Length: 272
Image (cartoon, rainbow, N blue to C red; front, side, top):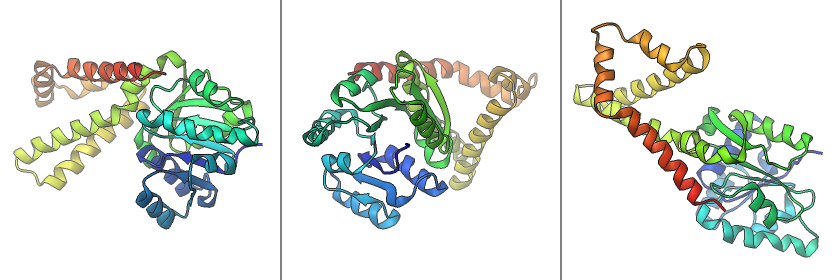
């Protein structure tokens, strides 16, 4: 039997991206979403605006819900997990599904801390809130076939799902987990250039964002590799090849590769 009541341990940006999308598309009902966060004003605002259930602490969340989504910052994960084992006073975590989106918390470490739970580790990203997320699920998850189908359907309502080796999740963190920030920086830089050249700020932002959205869609749907798509835009002696040359002269590719690798290295340092 798949879970009905889903509890969120932490109600920050990633948690909100997930449950707001699930509620919006009808994947779950607001009355089946529970949450706890020490930010009282945030909890009140979410309860008022969405109608989700707010509980008093993490142990109550564990008692009342069939599945838990662990969505706290890495520095808070030990404290959050320490409060969950109060569930052991009335048994253990047998039958509970726990999905973790915490950077660095391995599947094995999560299973060790929550005896009897069925656990899955997922690396998401924030475009989930508009249905364009990337979700990498560790193949070392301990979900049953039925639970895996339930999880996959929920995640697919927010974007694309990939099953990867646990050892690849740090690379995923650097690439897609942190990736939206790189895109936002690029959009901001393109818009700044547009403003410098005389475009209104709002127009420049919208044009830059749509340009990246369109390029991403082409890369996914054209059947061609990005290099071929780039070559098709770069006419000999034209404006685009001049721009690409300027990017290369500024070390654009190396900077992007360094950024992804730096994020992955930080994720590896958080592993536990």
